[in-house]
Image (tube, rainbow, N blue to C red; front, top):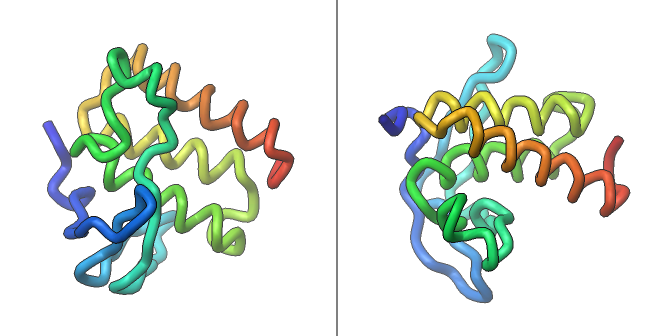
Length: 121
């Protein structure tokens, strides 16, 4: 079941990006954050070869968690660490009904990608 609070309203933009039509509000550690209307992101960063087992970047169970995760990565003051942003992504996948095995695969793929990219630790 997709959690209603994790379904943003968005539209295609360009270059495989989408943008928010309205502000999107989420709560992290008891504090409310607003992602502004017009914010752009690329959905879940899932390689095309994995779509058969994980779903596509814009599937309903991925879109909200990926929005929040990308916003947290661009605003590191929210969590203070990439690991916490990634863990919150995993938690939101669970809230959207993504099974344990898929959550595990996606979480560790995101962790490996972030470490490989060297952006955060």
